[in-house]
Length: 163
Image (cartoon, rainbow, N blue to C red; front, side, top):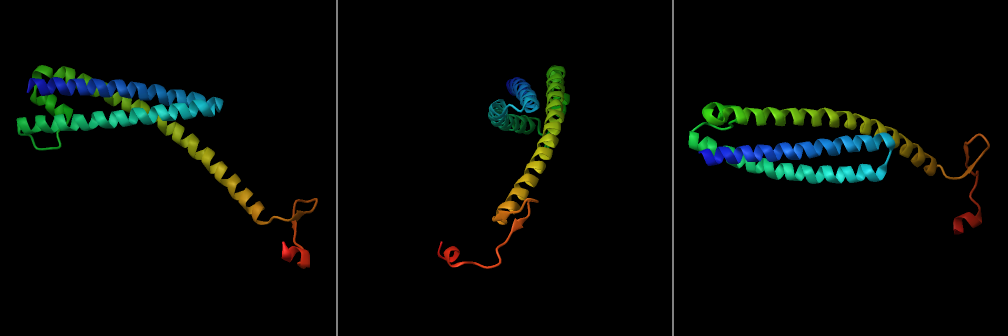
């Protein structure tokens, strides 16, 4: 049992390290967004995606270990880190500290990405409007008068039908 608790602690520490990296990448992306540095935004997005994949892999390992611990303690699933800490008092303090640190980091990432998501949504909304306006203008290709209104020819000539 002690080996699995130690493994769970190591996994939580790995999750904390990856979440710290992710938070740095999110903050660097937001700084790049303020400067409108497309290369830095792309690089940061790629780093974030790689970090998310590593977090997913570590999370799967955590779930396996927690399932094994729950089976040994004969506790019905789903079981939380808090419940495991309650059932294994010698490591309870360490487990709860790790859990609380991970929760804090996850909350920081959530709030940072929420703001970035809102900004991105607003920018995409404006870009969508511009694209629709351009598509509408292209749809009405022709000769424009000095007021910007397209002029439609009254008849189609022989040369226009051949082309």
